[in-house]
Image (tube, rainbow, N blue to C red; front, side, top):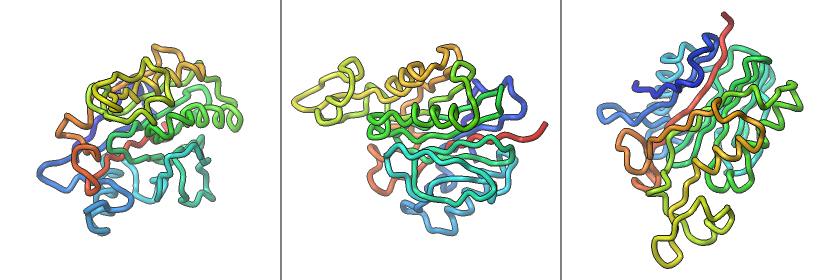
Length: 242
C-alpha cells in the first residue's frame, strides 16, 4: 500500500503518521462506509494500512460516520467508535484516523505532553473551526500549550480547483475565495485551516501544509472529481513507546 508520510513529525521517533494513496493496481479505498468497495475488501485495506504503520487493526480509532461538525472525542481504553470529526489521545498505542476525499485532514502532536490528534475539516467543519475545538480539548484535558504543537495539513481540494457557491464562500473571509463565474467561487480550505491553527496559537514553523490537490492529482481520491462512488484516503497518527 502506498502511503504519504508527513515530514513535520520526523524529529519524533515515537510518532507514526501517514495517509493512504489511491492505488491504480489495487483497491485503495479506505472508506469506513465502503463507498463502492465491499465490506471485506474495505476491512482488508484498513488492516494493510495499519500494518504499514506498525499497528494492529484493533488499535485504529476512527469515526464510523463523520458528520462535518465539530465533535471531538477522547480516545482511551473505554473508547467506543461513534460519530464525530475529531479524535484526541495521550495514551500511547492508538492509531487515530480520519477519512477524506477533498476535505482536509489535520494531524496533531505535542511532544511535551505526548498528546496527539486527528481532525476531519471539510468546509462545514472549517466554518465551525473544528481544528480549534480539537486544540481546546487538548488544552483542557491534557494541559497542552498550543505553541508547542506540531501539525500536518493533508492534501485536499485546492484553491485553484475546489468550486463552491456563494452560500459557502460567504461564510469565510473573502481572501479564501476567488470568483470564477456567477455564484461560483474557488475556495482554499487548506489555507483556512492553516490560519485557524495559527489563530489557536500554533507557531507557523510547526505547521506543514501539503500542496497536493486531491481534485487534480490522480494518486488521490476525490469526491468532486469521481462522484459519490469515490473512495477515501485514511490519514492517521499514532504514538508508540520508545
